Length: 474
Image (cartoon, rainbow, N blue to C red; front, side, top):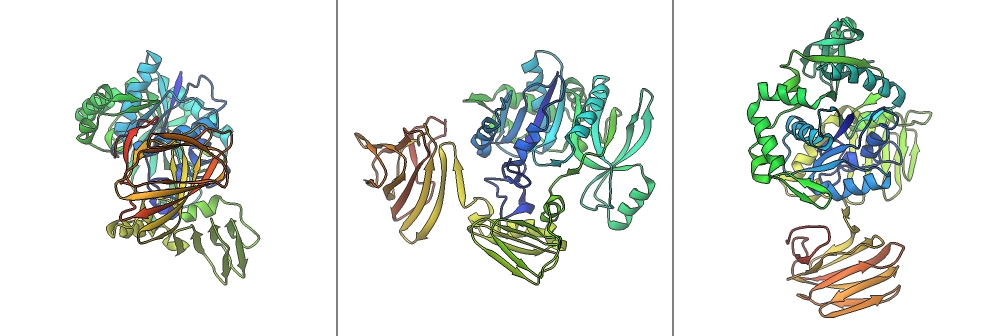
């Protein structure tokens, strides 16, 4: 049995302003109609002896992950929630322990980042089949991408001697950090260096044994964080106090660079980690002048640029080698050569406590979405969508009152001791301090405009009394 482990903990800051901490790139549709995590899981179909995947993610993303798996009819074996980022080594250790519990035996796990592009699924399947044979022979397998350019944005793997029983798989001689241009060119000339894809395959027990050898404290804390965690709806919530003190490290540093059992499967699978806007331009479908265009754009006399519109017309004249990305609350303009530095903008926004660094304009909740359409001192207007059958928590606000105007669908409203039904073109008023709840009892999405008035309009002014999604009181 092979259990996929999908690592979905990244924040994707280099793809700001589309990617935000509360909705990172793996949850976005960037290269197709499906999101990147949906693409990652869907391309596994056809691999023999494959079980349901384990997903590891930030607890803030849990409902979006569950909803996106439901949309593609995928059952998850477990969704493990990390209260903090501790890099990939602890996440894989916890997943390996959970995989053995699920199977009630030792299993091979296939570790995949949730946010990579792989164009050739058949070649990927063949690579997994080869890797599985080596993994069952107690090897720790990594997949090295055959380079087609002296890329300085990736780490590299130097291959050693081929295995005696499989000449297509080699011992790992060493891992090397991201090189400068001259060093990368020498790697290409030598021919024995591969891009480090961040994909791995091994028996769960072998990984845990090696981790115990090289970092026993990490293994101990990982086991304890899982053992003392709790089940929360369809999620596994790790013990926060224990996981906080768990050492953090990548699989590469914690295990793969130290073990004598590391092997590399060279692959040519149309791989890209979409680590920058330039990478997204590279995998996109371009026009006759090399421009990749998304959304409502008007482009004249421009070349080799990535131009993305989310909400309004973006017009470009005389631009070359640029990235231009428009969202409802932010616009990015950057030269492609500086695309890797977008993270510095996010850092600056965080330092100045701008929420554009963290929260997308459209905010996703387990019950639906909301977005701000106007905001001034003492008032705010939101567009709210509630999914059929979903309902918000029973709650109150200490500092604001709310007016609801239904524009589509049917709502069941609780306000104090009253319950009543509202339809299109009807409105109601929720006084400050009154317990209230909104529910979609219909079969189509419920859409409404909410106007908030009061001295404080922050999202943390919520006291929850009952919530079907298990969210804590705020």
